[in-house]
Length: 164
Image: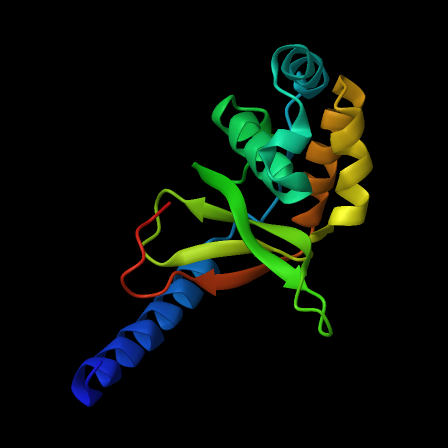
């Protein structure tokens, strides 16, 4: 990438960060996430009809798939219309191996804003839930995802990335 294009890329990313912060601050509703009243029934039904978790790339893939399906089915209660998806990972500083999955919320009515959950969920906490795979385990995984949004952080999609 030549110097002019690189400078334009960085300028666009700075603009998007400013826009994301503004989009975040304009919202006065609070960032409350939770589970619908029927989440337990949904979890039992999902457990009875879904494939085993390990085939989905370990705990991160299992949780990401689970959250996307629960969100699409209206099981995750969000502060406004949008989508909840896997958004980031934590890594071990020594091994550089991913150790936890973090989720984000893409509001429908936002150009650059992504709201990141305040903390990621450790694979060691998800792995036994994935292994069990029953309704109670699925419900617990969804509860942990909703709880991870107790505190949120503003984030911006990079220039050139497509909205999820």
